[in-house]
Structure formats: structure tokens, C-alpha cells
Image (cartoon, rainbow, N blue to C red; front, top):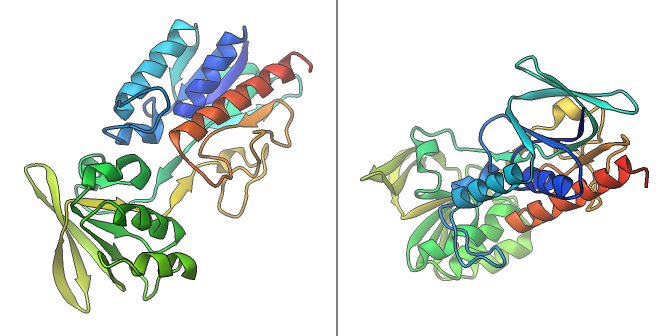
Length: 302
């Protein structure tokens, strides 16, 4: 039996495993895709304290090696359920695996909602981004498009407008849904323009790099030349299989605060999957540490 099973191998999950092992607990990390989560889409990370520059993949590889060196186990499987047996939990997987532990950390992350365009996945990190804080500097003095019209899209665009030659907002609705205050700030900028009631139809590439976005607007097909596309149309949590253990808010995120606790003793949450205002690499690893230490206290009867 493991002391702690971590569901998810992103920054929060791997940090939870690291802290568990460092506190003398045996940890298993179960990841369904690949270790690192969303950060692996970032070709350069320059806002992580203590590290001048690294790629998201480098962070993922180094952290994975770190937890393996500490003695953590890993499994590549898809977790479908966590059964609460009182003094222990049973983690079940789609592949038929069944693992017992004393505490669970759910670090299931989120996935970005995509536009659904051909070739979109291949351009993530190579012209398509989801984070102006992470990647905005790469487009300094260049033209970028921002897909979306809510608060997140407006906030991304405000940051980009400080660096980019031009920011073009592309919204599929007839209006922007974000706060009027944010709209006032953004559209007061001379280098920002917008199109509403846009239908995205394709991407223009050259030599494997993004060169423009194809849209339908006012019944006409158009190509918007750009150097980068920031997609801000929402995040999708995948927490539904664990709704019996932890409350979800109306958006599907675990409804818990920075303590990372749930209503089920011995079950904790960490990272982007929980309700929070800021989703960054630093906040994910902070959650991982918090959840793991809480799990250790629970196991120790404290």
C-alpha cells in the first residue's frame, strides 16, 4: 500500500510527490498522457524564480528525474475513480489497475479549450500560445491575434498591447463579454483593433510557422496576417469522476481554497484543477507542496 497516490503528473502533481517522498512517505504518481502538463507547451519559461530561462519540457524532465531520484513510483494510466474506504483509498484506472493508499492528491489539471482548426495542435508553442505572461516577450514588436472576448482574453490582450506592434481581437459573438472596465483599458490603446461575429476557418503557415488566421466575417473569407495567436476561450477541468469526494463549483473546478482540502478526509487537491484566480507554474507547484504536506499531516494523525 502506498502512503500517497497523486493523480496527475503536471507541476502540482510532481511537486506533491516530491514533498511526500521528502517527508518519508511512499508516493505513486499516475499520469494518463505525459509528465509536465500545460507547461510543456511553453518553449521558453522565464518567470520561474531561480531559473533565468528554460523550456517547459526541460522543467518537466528535470522535475520527473527529481521525483524518481527521491524514490517515487510512476504509472501511465487513466484514473477513472477513487474509492473512499475510510482508513484507506482505492484508486482505479481505465486499464484495470487498482492501487491502495492512505491519502490521495488530485492534481488533474485542466486543458485549454481549442478552436478546432486543422493543424492547431502542431502549432501550440510554435505560434499558438495560451499565456501572455509566459510567451508575450517572444512577440515584442510583432502582430498577434487574440481569440476570445471574456475577461481572460481581455487581460491577455492588455499585456500583449504593452509589447506588440498590433493586437487584433477576434471574437465569435457580436460583443465582448468581459468587464467593461477591461474593455475601456484595452480599446483605448492605438495598437488594438477588434472584429466581432467572427468564424474561425483555418490557419496560415509557412515553413511550419504561423503566418495568419483565416476567418469568415460579414459573409466574406478573410486572412488576418499575424505572427502569433493567443487562444483565450476557456479552460476545461476534468474533475467529474471525483465529484463524490470533492465539491465542484459551477465551472467544474474543485471548490476549495489554498489549503487544498476537500470534504473527504484523506483526499486533497492541487493545481489548476481547483478554484483559483491565478494559474501559473509557481502557483501550481505551491499547491503541490501544500497538498502533500496536508496529506502527510493527515497520515501522521495530526
